[in-house]
Image (cartoon, rainbow, N blue to C red; front, top):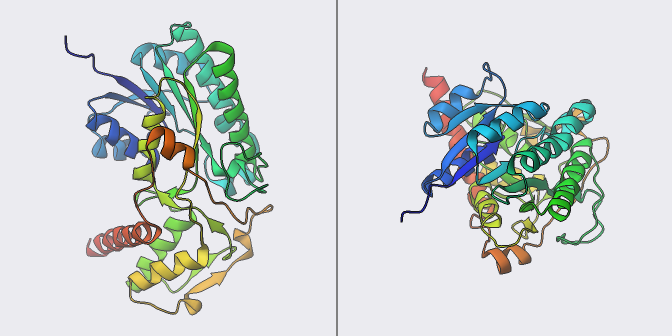
Length: 331
């Protein structure tokens, strides 16, 4: 007898992780549904063009009833909660909204699974946790047992979602796992994030469309990987017999200055000092200076590791933005 086609529901389908995860699941013959907020969502057309095989379902992480209805309709085997107010700087400006969507949104989805699944254990749940949980780090590198000390409303909301996932796993036996993902980027990253901001503006500088890049703290260090690699880890977590929490990271750290070095060098500019301006508007009220993950557990248990180097990632993004900006010029 042929095995039944698996079904997956992804929140945050319009984000970079959502699109890469959907592509991965489709390649594995899943029937994929994407939760999308509202008829007039500006990113709807992008998803429909990029992922025509994905069925979009209306729902909102702030609306419990819509989540119950979405689960009833999709009847998924796997639920991936990638939806969030995920830009750290915005979370300082809109902390209540961040708490509602990023924190309580996960709770609403877990409760909807509990109601619809009814203890049958059919629906498996993935929660997108984050390295921002560590914030003011207690040890370096950070692993699954490192204490959390978030330094932003986003990090605090994610801590709530993380522990609520653990609570539903322990209280109701839901197969619920958290992926503590360190920074992961791609040519699909939003322009508000520093990596994409740099690569898109470097492309524009190369093409003579602008002269400088305004940035905050150039000494901040992050563990940057490729989003296309990280979604494989998400999927692997839900294939395990027992749910658990895993750090996904490269195990390397790089500064904003190193990011600038690689990006400018890719367009033939060795000295970028005159092209970068430090702007106090982009300084965080509480800075996270150094994040570096220890992915040992994920490698040992899941067989997962990051496959794309930092240099390969940034070069990929610069090339993508050069192509994009060149297409705009040609119109």
